[in-house]
Image 1: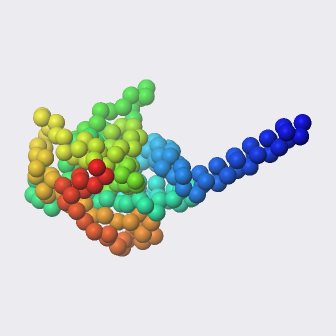
Image 2 (image 1 turned 135 degrees about the vertical axis):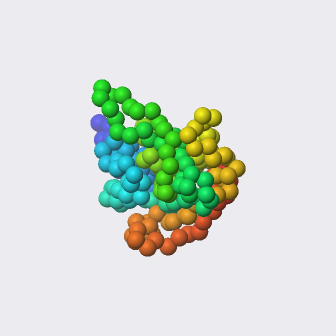
Image 3 (image 1 turned 60 degrees about the vertical axis):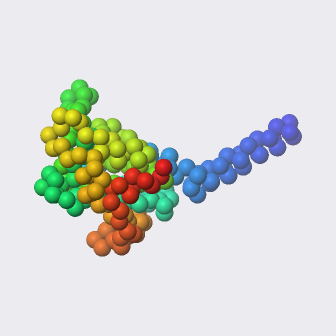
Length: 197
């Protein structure tokens, strides 16, 4: 009986310690994934990539998810292709339609695109039709560089690597002052592709 009480007491305190460690950062990636998955269906606004990311950061802050290492990536086209717009290959196909079916992903063009990246994983509300957290390199390849041979706006891999600029912001700084965030630098898409290898 005494041994059983001691065992249960130790088990209880072990659970408390594990729980506190999870709150302190060990499970922040998983917790951010869960928030992203929920918001992908409940809070998505088409054409509002920055607002969608800010909503995710707000929820992360509210739930005490540590996003200190997260970055905001703002992608723009510095060239002349597609009238200076960013050409995406696997963009979310719009709202869900009746009976649980979805529209297929589609090629889209935007003036810019904003995503959240943390620990080399990308959170993009406009990527595919289901919440998909993807490694940075695979995301860049699939979303921008692997063009469909019969796409409406063929730009070319080499042109995108050369002309697409990515401004990088520290996510907590961006969250604190979205109107005037301090840029942490910028890279061409070709440079960003080399990160997280």
